[in-house]
Structure formats: structure tokens, C-alpha cells
Image (cartoon, rainbow, N blue to C red; front, side, top):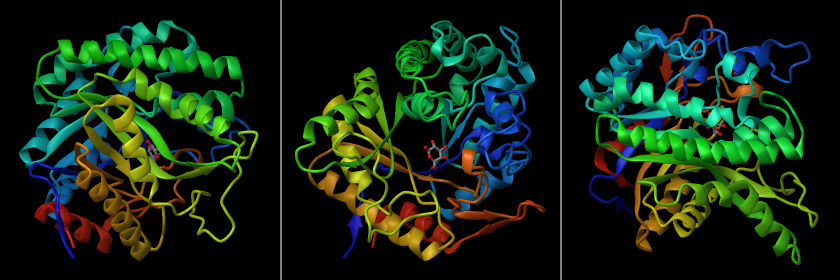
Amino acid sequence: MSFTFPNGFVWGTATAAHQVEGGTWNNDWWEFEHAPGSPAVEPAGDACDHFWRYPSDIAMLADFGFGAYRFSLEWSRIEPDEGEFSRSALDHYRRMCATTREAGLIPVVTFHHFTTPRWAVTNGGWTDPAIVDRFARFCEVAVAALGDDIGMACTINEPNIVSLMGHMVGVFPPGHSDLGEYAAANENLKAAHRKGYDAIKSGPGDFPVGSCVAMGDWWAPDGAEGVLAQTREMHEGQHLAAAAGDDFIGVQAYSRTRLSAEGLPEGPEPGIEVLDMGYEYWPNALEVSIRYAADVTASPVYVTENGIGTTDDAQRIRYVTDALGGVRRCLDDGLDVRGYFYWSLLDNFEWVLGYRPRFGLVGVDRVTQVRTPKPSAAWLGEIARTNTLE
Ligand code: GAL
């Protein structure tokens, strides 16, 4: 059986600055990784040295057959201190956009992917409403320099993970666990998305702009439907609603969350395969998420992230095949799904878990930085090239 995706369906891979560039020392994550007692198992360090190696990485991506590359701007490079902008950092990202285009790929630029400059965090971080104008000003300056070369933009990557992991679970900076902070961060992240969106839209260039929300499948025992709906609304719904009316909604889905009758996370169901991330092998998460996002926002959907952290590349191929089957069912039902970005191009720094989870289509030697494509790279590249899933 084979399925051909709609004409113009965009196939890409995604990365984020702190996870691949190396040397991103001026942000809150770097500080968090080095703090005494940090839950982060290791620092990002040189990461994949992508700051210097992006030309060959992008060339490799194009050779595989992809049509787009999603990467992020490192705010702390562009605005190393409050109101002080680096022309050299902006030029770097301009070259990245140009290199991406010259390779025949659409540059998809994320303005904030988990990392915030140290100065902005010292002065209040995401719980202080001042962050909204700070982020909007950064967007305004960045888009003025890059806008005419951007192909598509995401404002804030997974705002709901920034608030949840940073202010409730405490395994992302600032490492707090405080319901009041969690609520404040959510409000500021939603407002920053809106203001950032407007700033990007008012700059040069004419390209789609959207938000990227962390989503997944959800389960709770019978009788706990209310708790389930409430949790889903708190985690996903409010951020989807804040993105309604945007040019698109970015869906990012990996797995399923099981809740107890009280709404607490239950962990994997016995008998279901558990991945290196500690969650279930659950490719169906993508289909469920696309449907929910389309329902809440009524916007066109791009899968801006989907993937699996595994050392078993055959399992990766199986996972993506299953997940794409879900995309296909959505398309068959008439949903407007416009693209799929695999997370990630390279094995990279997986936040608090360090370099152990292997999401890449390409392996990276941690000492020599030598890249070794896995079979899944050619496999997914061929799907991208033919726009067809066999
Ligand atoms: C997302 C995140 C990425 C990457 C991925 C794999 O939540 O945006 O940066 O880490 O998960 O876990």
C-alpha cells in the first residue's frame, strides 16, 4: 500500500540552538546545568558544534531529500545584555537562513526554544510580566534583520513545557515547583506569543507565523473524565486557544500521559514498551494531537516536532511509519495538515537528560563531532523526496 501526501506538503527536520550549537553559555539553561545539585545530568558544552558546522549539516539534510529545516535563534547571542543587540549574531543567523535557502530548503525559524538570556532571568524571568515586552522587542529586532530571508516562523517553542517543567516539575530552569508561578508563567508566555506574533508579522518578509505546543495522547480511568478534560485544558487547551487565528498551529507530540483519578501522572501502562525518555512508545499521540489542535484552533496544522529517542533505528522507522499513518488518517478526514518535521536531524543535548536519548537521524561522535547518518535518514528522506509513504 502506498499513500501520497498532498502537493506542497512540507518535509523537514528540527533542531534548537542550545541543543546543537555549542557554547551557548549566556542563557539560563547553561547556568542551570552548572548549578550545584542541578538535576541536569551533564552540561551542553560544545553540543554538536552546529554553530560552525551548519553548512555541512544543512547540505546533508538537503541530500537526504528534505525540503525544510527548522532551527532556533539563540536570544542570548542576539541580545547578550538588556537592549544590547549583536549585529554579528544576527549576521550569523542571516547566513544560516541564506545557506538553508541555497540548499533548496525552507528556513523555519523558531524565535524562542526553551533558552532565555541570563539577564532576562535575573531580572524576573517568565513569571514577571516585563518578559512580554522584552520578548516582543527581541522579535522586532530579529525580524528586522532576518525577515526577508525567513520561510516560516514559530514564536515560542512549547510554552506549556517552559511553564510546566520550569515552574511546576522543577527540572527545567529556574527549577521551581510553585503553582502560582506556574500560572503566572503561563499568562506571560501566552501574552509573549501574541505580542511576539504581532512584532514578527509587522516586520519585513511575508511568511506564515505560528506557535508550537507540546501535546500528546491522554488517558484517565473511567469516571475521571472531568479531571482528564481539566488537565488537558490546563496543559494544552489554554495555549492552543492563545494561538487561535494564527497562520498555523504547530503540533509537537511524542507519547501519552496517563493520569490517576486525582489527575496525577501515573507512569506507563504495564506491558507497553517504555522508551529511554521514560514514557510509552505511543505513536498514536500524533493523530490525537493533530485532531485536538485542529478542533481548538481551526488553523492549518504543521507537525513541527515528532520523533523518538532510541538506539534502535528500526524502532525509529516503525515509530515514524505509525505516526505518519495517523497523519494520513487526518488528511483522509479532510484536516488541513501541511507538513511534518522530524525531531531531530542530529543526536543532540536532550535537556535535563543530557546526551543519552538519541533522537537523531544522524549520529554524532561526542569527541570528534563526526556525523554518521542512520538508515532512517535515507528512509525518511526518500519519503520526503517522493512525498509518498509506502
Ligand atoms: C520537545 C522539545 C525538543 C526536544 C524534544 C524531544 O519537547 O521541543 O527540544 O527536546 O522534545 O524530547
